[in-house]
Structures are given as C-alpha cells and as structure tokens.
Image (cartoon, rainbow, N blue to C red; front, side, top):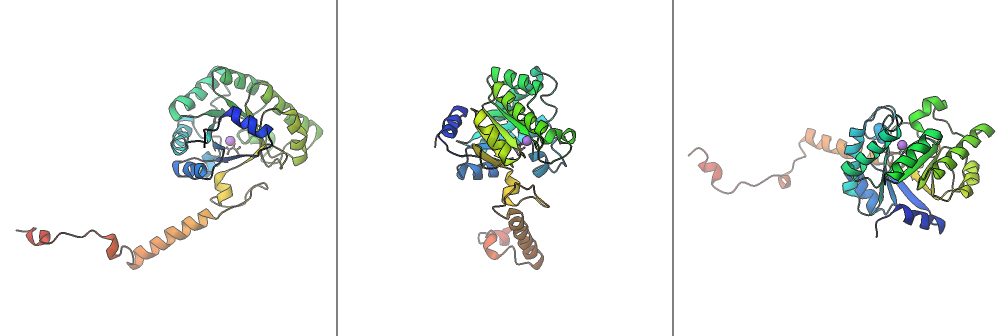
Length: 278
Ligand code: KIV
Ligand code: NA
C-alpha cells in the first residue's frame, strides 16, 4: 500500500470512497491501525484523557504530545499521521501556531496537524500553517478544548443560529486552506446539508453517515475506557476486560506459585554449581 497523502484522500472521497480515521497514542496502537489498513491515524489530544489520564484535553502540553506523536509515527508506514495542536499552542498568534506545527513535523514526523475552531482567528492560523508547508485539518462543531465556552459536551448546531455558525465555521476552515475537516457532534441532517458545500473531505464523529469518512477515539471503539461513552460511540471490542483478565490471571498464578513453571526457567550447565564454592 502506498503512503496516504492529503491529495489522495480528496481523490478517493470524490470517488465516493469512505475514509477511515482512528486515533492512536502509542506504538502498538499505531501498528494495529496500520495493520487494519486505516487511512488516517490521528494523534488526538483526546490522548490527554484516554492515554494520560487528565480529566480534559486542556492540560496536555506540546512536549507530551510530541512523545505520543513520535511513537505513533514509528508505528505507521502508510497511514497519514495527523497530530492535534494542543490547547494553548496555537491561540496566541499565527507565529506561535506555525512554530508549534513545525515542531510536530520536525521532532515527531507528523504529516499534518489539526486545530479546533472555525472563526476569524483559526482561519488565519490555518492559512499561516499551510503557507509554511504543513497541511492542516480543521475541526468544527463540538470542539472539546473550548467545551466550557460552548456550554458543555452537548451536540452543536441545533438552533438556526447555531447551525449557521457550524456551517460558516466549516466554510471558513475550507476557505482558509484546510485539506480536510472533522465535524463533531452535530445533527446528521446538518452534516448532510453542509457536506455538498465542501470540496475537501469531511470526517464525521457524531455527524451521521452523509460525510466522507468517520473517526472514533481508539479507546472508545476498543472498549478501553470506563464509564458511559458518548452517543456516537460504537464498541467493537472489550480490550479493557481482556487486559484486566490477563493481568488477573498472571497475578493469580504468581500468588499460587503456578507461574513461573519449569519451562520459564534457565538451566544451569552441569558442574557450575559444584564448582561455585571451590
Ligand atoms: O482528539 C481527538 O480524538 C479528536 C477526534 C475525536 C476528532 O479530535
Ligand atoms: Na482533539
């Protein structure tokens, strides 16, 4: 399989092919995504929560994201690697945004970066980063970094004014030069209405089927998270249960002495022990 590129994604989306995107935050997950043949691996700042245990995406730093992103890069050979610009790393100025994006490319091998928002400021950021030669993916609708300002983690665009805002944000992101965008947590009918206005691939998460592809947080789809998941999450595996069962079986065998068995031990060549005290 050839390396996925932003232009190749646009060609395939235009041909009606559904694009597959999933998050990953470490080497084994990147390997699994690569082996499963996904198109885009997102080192999402959702990793702040599901991988690093913070209670929101806000605290994660550029240095922490660089470690996650570099591991994912090492695990991928053909998937496009997109890295989220974390909160606080692109809001100050276009210059700050370019500097952060360039770090992800140079230090972690990112193919592209993603940033949240669609208004005047993100548009200038997107233009600045793409002008520096780094492809940008937009992210509109529910934007977790500013969920407090949006009034929480609820679906966006459910009033005329709010729907207009999501649409205008999506168009602003496209106009600014993003090669693709994520539509998160908006009514399926709104995504279907916006989709024909876009000539760049729209990847949905909680945006219904009438978009160019889907993204889910890896830990959600694998069943690696505890507690209630968002409405759009579908679970395809029970990995946390599998991990717990594996560790519990190991713990049980250590406690009973069943592990290690003779087959896990190293043999000593004849005579060495006899000569030990000689
Ligand atoms: O951080 C993330 O995982 C994301 C996706 C949900 C789009 O931004
Ligand atoms: Na994100």
